[in-house]
Image (cartoon, rainbow, N blue to C red; front, side, top):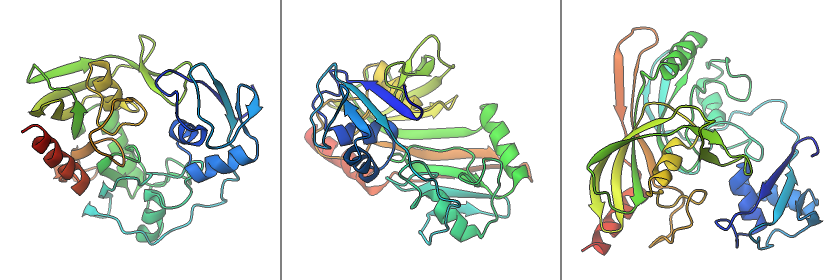
Length: 307
């Protein structure tokens, strides 16, 4: 395998997808960037150059080399942020759907970091390097809700330690397939990166400990509205855990191919509650954010369908 090359074996689940759509999902690069890479013949299907609209089949071997000149610096951008709380040490943001938290291949603008650089004029922690100033933790681009960012290195160290100690309170709302028989439960299954598809997370005994507590808010026929509380914070944890017990998230284009009753712009997952000890005062702070309009609309539609 060449340097910077990634390879994937197409499963039955991903069969039928366009090449550009599949690679954008798996690499988290922008679709436009993926399409440019395909045009430059840096993406191969079974060893041959293909077009962006090529439909994949189960068993196909896809390889891609995504190389992009990284900007010398990440530029500040005047992007509105929904700021829930702010002081000299921390800033809590209610992130919108589709917004990437920090720069990555194909996403060097329009991120939370670009917006923070403009808003804070450089008053951000630098423990995570030039590409992730102030970023202590992240949520997926298509997940909405609360994240806390650090303005100082002292604040960053404190918040990171709380995350590591699992003392941070993180509660999510989600809409998933299939009603529950039980009112609540816990999924305790280790999560690892997939051997075949490195962009997907899987349940594996070789993985890191992952614990998700859930309770049912409302069963709605073939769907359910639930609350999930993270004890650990692994990549895609809620999405992978809920799929593993037969309740994949509505709108999740990576972990389910189940047919949805209506279109969504991403998985119905919202980080609605965030609590932590203030890194300087030691005071416990807890913030809440209501799910976005599309989440609320999905709930309303599902209730109507269940009547």
